[in-house]
Length: 170
Image (cartoon, rainbow, N blue to C red; front, side, top):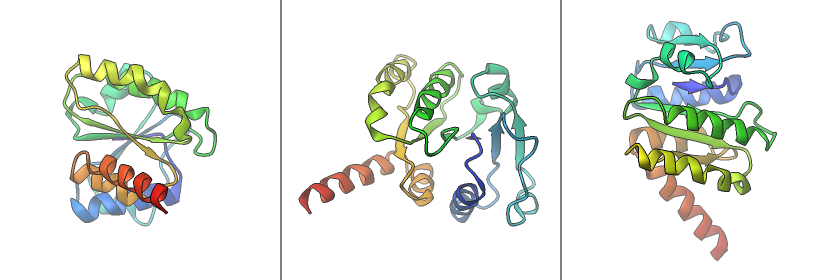
């Protein structure tokens, strides 16, 4: 499940990365701002199991329509990829997802890494629910990192940590 349409380029990149690793895996996009998802490079023809749910991811009914409790992972994009305040909405959506039963992974794209502190209460919710902790990926990083995280849980965090150490050495 992908929450908040990230734009043609980002969505196309992520879907290609996902389908390269798992051809035909079902994809659902949840967004409240679009009437329908545009056909991106034959997207609708590539996957018969692709569908779109129009509605707010802050509402339980919308998440149920997207069948979140049965999915492998949820990728949350910020509503506005260049506005740091969008991280607050991402946090609220992540909190809402913690209330949905299931063992799905949550991967959040964040606009401003200095906003990571607002997610500390979210992590407590996941620990209390005995669920995998969400992974936070900066928007500046490529879709390949998200796809890798979907295939190999917790690898993204290791890559992010490595890049921080490498940057501090150089």
